[in-house]
Amino acid sequence: MAETTPNHTQTVSEWAAYDSSGNITPYTFKRRENGVNDVSIEILYCGICQTDIHYVKNEWGITRYPVVPGHEIVGVVSKVGREVKGFKGGWCYDASEKDGG
Image (cartoon, rainbow, N blue to C red):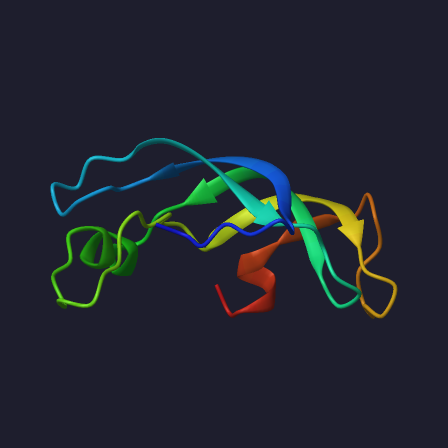
């Protein structure tokens, strides 16, 4: 389980695997507020690739549960830290354009 401290005030809802069954169910947790170098993205769409499936099913023996799969996202930038360059609030973000797809 993720560490929770007094800084963890932001409630986040995701989908997560809790074990190697491959089932993904709703998961709510608290995370820290954004820092000066952070960007928050409201995720509108998320793809799950074969690597995510291997990880969810712990096929490599390294998964720590709960795990939130899906790194291929499309969303809208909702918060930008004051030191961040290259992102602005309200911009559409497609992760596949940033990491080669």
